[in-house]
Image (tube, rainbow, N blue to C red; front, side):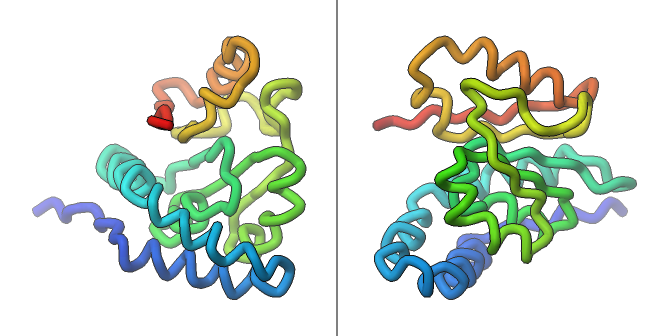
Length: 165
């Protein structure tokens, strides 16, 4: 009998946010409200993980790249399910949030995807999440999408969500 994939939950996602608050509040006392506000995006992140777990290979650990990771909550939570997680964001977010992600086993790198190539080898990822990012680009996202295609493995999948705001 095939075992159902584990199901990500809001309670466990909240545990990740609480850990991030503990890790980051010493550096930024005002950051707690901003981090806790990430629970508003939890539904999208949980659906992303559910998709990865449902469609990922049972034989090997899938590799995920989260573009626009900010606090790194999706990538950190994904590692709890055995997903090899990497993340990129602008230098400002990298400097502020990467330490907590790196402690949790996430390969978090600094990259402005609108001007620089993704800092990963060709065909490195089974999945790329691109959540609430594309609408922030000032120019056509074509170059970024070409970079995503470059780092995706053959048959890989992009999970893209547009913000409603």
